[in-house]
Image (tube, rainbow, N blue to C red):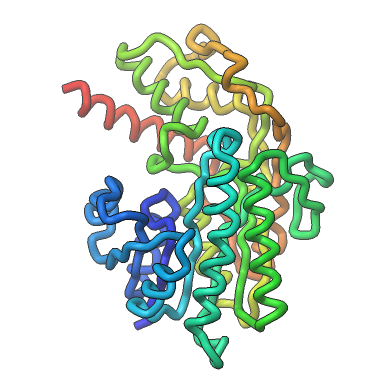
Length: 327
């Protein structure tokens, strides 16, 4: 039975990846920060077969202990402070967790492997936010990185550190440059879930409108459940490498609103949407669209869920949740 250690197991990716690995017969260990983390119960309820360990990406000794207990064949580093807007308010903490935290878990992996570096394979969750002020359209693995947020800068550090451990120590280490991926499990602070949750509440008469920032920003949105399959496929390859994971299609915030409101049976979204400069980024990333050719040709990976299916899925989930909460 292969063994996997997942950091960031409480997030949407961690939950979907846990389900995938468990379905493949893995013994799965999830690293959770803090014994009283309120999301531990979510993990226990959603993926009860995951064995929970406590640890912190900023504390190397806790990671070494987690490796000692889990004895993993595969390590998936999904842990990060992942809300981009928050990173401007807390750039130092974001750098420590999202950036230096990658170095800590890479070093814990190297120490665990010892003289047999081939005993473990490592996955790093890189991000399309690393492209920032994009230099190619679409973006591919060789596109120059030009991050436009503290989060993006921290992800670039972790990305290059992963490459360095691969080249310096021979570690089977892969980075998945994942473009925006969403699901009903996405936190409500993210724009897709903020919209689908608001649409559900508007449909049910629980709120009147939703307030957003830049409606012209464009993103390459996919389904998180599809993207974790790409992560697993990377670690099954003979050698580690870097892969863009994306749909290759771009959608605007306006298109997101149109699909979400239509899914709830509301044709004209403009009457319910307001804009506020407070929700504008200090340095906007206007257009992100990935080129997933390498992932398709090498990994045999393709997204299964379309943008329209994804947003409809999220609206329907939020309608059910809001109805239950309103009882």
